[in-house]
Length: 109
Image (cartoon, rainbow, N blue to C red; front, side, top):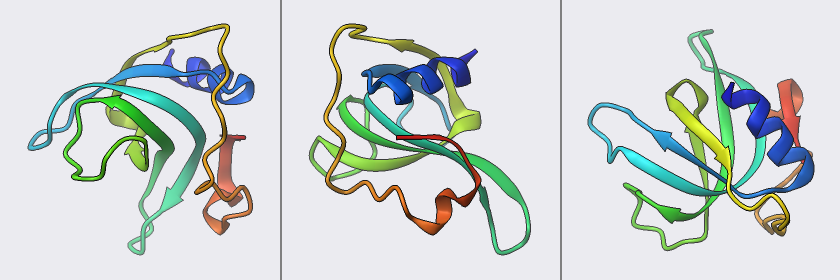
C-alpha cells in the first residue's frame, strides 16, 4: 500500500517515486522527498488526504524549476516505491512542521 511506503519514507527521510494520474494534468512519474501527509478540509466541509512533497525530478505541470515544494492529492498517487533506501534527503527550508494544516497529520517529518 502506498501509504505505508510513504510513512516509512517520511520517518526515515527517504526518496520516493510514484505515478500521479489526474485527467487534464501531465500524468506520469514524480520523484522526490515526501515531508507530510495530512487530512485537509475544504470550505465546503469535504475532506481529502494531501501530501507535501519536494519534487526533484519527473513529470510536472508547474513552471517552477526542481526542486520545488508541491502538494499532491493522495488519492491520485499509485505505484509508490522507495528509490534509494540507504540515502537520506535533507528537509526543505520551505517545510514548516508547525503549519496549522498539519493539525490532522497522518505522518510528517
